[in-house]
Length: 434
Image (cartoon, rainbow, N blue to C red; front, side, top):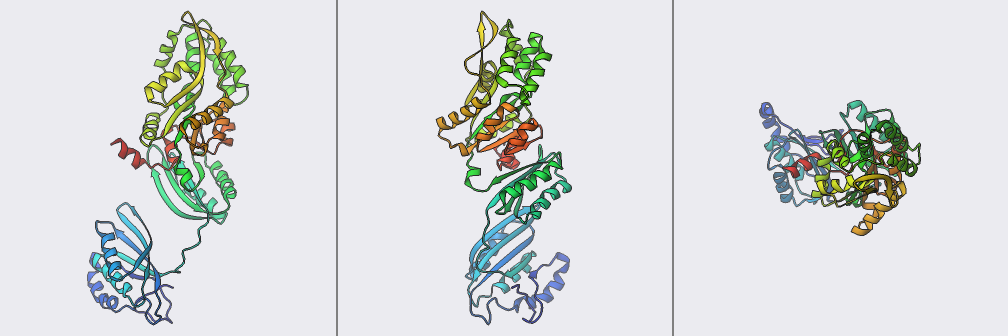
């Protein structure tokens, strides 16, 4: 039931509202008498009522304090409260229980008139609306257009789901939003959003279950080549050895899943036979970090994450990355070196897709983190098992075979965009940097 001042019970009711701008103060004074004589909530009924109060207008200090003072005088008890400020405009919702006979409506409307802020009051059912399971939908893109956002929200509406909350996570380096969606049809929602995202090539959409499990992620394991860095380290060495074209062709095929990773790696490494170890220094000088990598790692460390790299590349690079970036662990293949030159052989087991998944589990066990609280990020076919094993697998600018299998994908060229998939806001990142 919506209660309004100045109407009889037989008259169609609207929201009770007080809204006066500076140039409406004269008219507002004439209406003040109506506010002061508004009917009491519960008058003639004798029962307590549950009331939703909505506040909107220019934000400033003291709005919450003033409203709470009014509620306290009326002996109201707060049952729920939510607030958001957008471009200096406050939207505040408060659900309260009002004892019978208390003049809450009159007091709240008078307070709104005095504060020059809009107040909307409505009687609501005393029992909270039953909650269906929550899913967090993250929408990310270079510039999320109304058309792209509309495609997502239409997909949600088409399966009968409801959006409870929308929060902007970032404006830079990409636009990203987080939507809390209520539905018991998780798989139907995933399929609908996958279809919507497929029609919007610049849009990434992720779906995760709401709850502590999502926010408790504490271990991130990264691939190196074309993920943490923009390059493939074996191609950097191949350029020094004069066999770049041949090695690159095999690397591309292996990452697309067209060649067996171990066989192709051993074949590529043989082409490096005789290359002097000083070539590593020359190759290192040409190595390029992925944009956003420093911000990504710095933020994870500040949040207490354990961060490791698991690479199908070589320890001569990953050991340096570990030391330079302050990583907790680094695993890769070990090249055999004799008399200052590479022999063209790999020592020990190859770090292939199964080995990467096993290393993820081993690291999680060693640091005491459940596998459900892990995140894996990679781009190639040899990352598939690791992405599937992790609590959240993120395909980063990945090959189609990887994107299709991962929990979610990021197609923008910024590694720190993965932070938004974890619900971390850009403002929090910048505040930590400051």
